[in-house]
Image (cartoon, rainbow, N blue to C red):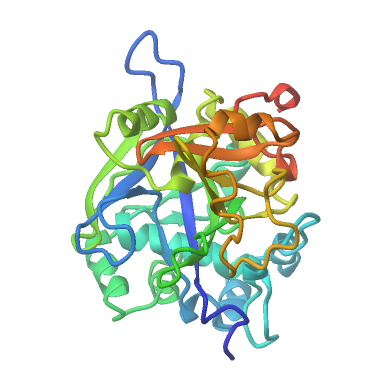
Length: 360
């Protein structure tokens, strides 16, 4: 069955991996680092960009064989069903089109886990004993021939399910927390992705095994340091990465983030598809909740008002709006984020106004 928007974009999933780490300097505030990698120059989509691990949805992620797999390993069906019970906004990517397929709320998690292993060799597995000791945290396994399995799965010689069957493990779908959902802007017609971002937290940094065809280099660093390197043009972060790292940058404690992500997990994800407006001094991308965001936007059409404010500076355009949720670009490496109301889906505030966050 061809999905509703298949001719316009592909579905994908990404994983924000956060790992506990001791501050390397007395002035360092963060007790964790984030895993990102630089794509190779030959990558078809956004070559040389720095991104979170992730990639395109594959039919193996949705095969009903996973139901039997979970059953054989005594994973309660009620626990799996709990992953599908979300109260908030549900973009179309979460829609399961056939009862013959695994529920999308589960299969997208499997996609994110599979891609993190294919690209960087990080295999997150369930461990009930540690789960009780360290609630909200994922566990990783590396006591096997990581590189051999990684290559076989990447080359299509084995499936992710076959890997777990051979190891006797279960992919940790339960400690993956729904974080956000992004859609490439309509102007990129030939290469668009609707991507679900999940967040996983680890109590230590795992070894990384970069896949040579996809990964040029990888980094473990704090959100603030990655953003600073982006501003200094030492690397280039793709737009969703700058947004997500910016709102992470205001939270320095991994335990607080883990509790927050677990509590927010079922509140849904509003689809974030940026819509462009030209300005005299740069470009503005508005997001849902902004006064300039098109009402009833179909995510396919170009913005007919692209140049409506083109002769005005960004600040003047901003001051004409009551509700803001936008990113103002001066160039590829310099952005400013604006949000003057409560974040969508009870999420972190992009400007750090997280007063409500103290409860976590």
